Image 1 (spheres, rainbow, N blue to C red):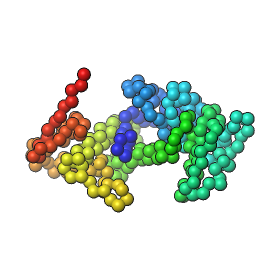
Image 2: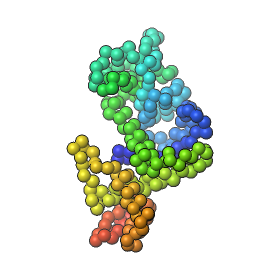
Image 3: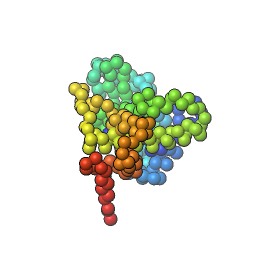
Image 4: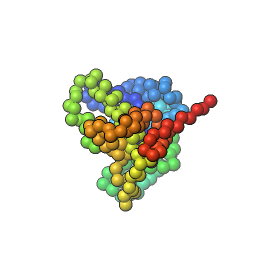
Amino acid sequence: MYKGTAIPVYWLVLNKKGNSNQRERIALLNRFISQFGRDNILGILGDREFIGEHWWKWLTRHQIPFLMRIKENQLMTNRQGHQQNMHSRFKDLKQGQHRFLRKTFRVSGQWVWLSGMKLDSGELLVLAANQPFRDPFGTYRLRWEIENLFQCLKGRGFHWEDTRLTHYRRIKKVMALLAIGFCWAHKVGEWKHRFIRPLTIKKHGRPEQSLFRYGLDVLTNSLLHGFRRTEDAIRLWVLFLWPPDLITTQDGRVILILKIED
């Protein structure tokens, strides 16, 4: 997660219909751990499809925190072995109210901490975690950043769905190109927001457009209509290669600042 959106690092194109299974999720996460290490994972967030005894036990055994949404009709078991419906523990909540259960319950073969909130829509949001979270609902709200990514890849950005690709290998290659293109556009947007013209913040507290869209418009205009100066092309190429915080401008020129560390 980065500045309000998610960045694709690893992904798996499923050569089948439906959701990923527990084995595929573990394999994908192992790819991440082999490159970045387990300690660089602050937590795993997932919607209602991402439950499962084997998967949850694997995360707990490897000391990886998770916070997953579960269905309100899911069964829960207390320490005395009594089962009850999840909805029964939170059905009296009113819109906007929430509740944290003080004891752990067994769900999908794993002892978890449970919390519930009645949304404004009237729907019940129930979260399960393998460790206590100080603000589980605020933390889970960060999951929306992957939805922001999908909007950038689709209707509000690259219009991926218009390609109508269905072949497994082609989808895999396009996803790689989109991930690179997304990062490039985001970095250009950061650079322009920081050094050229800051985005206006609206009354609702959000900028007039996303950093990604801000940068994508610059890239689109430059690549379709050409560059007025050679420096403009060099600047975009430098932004592609280096982080925006290592780049500044002076009199319309690009100055690259390199950091040397032991």
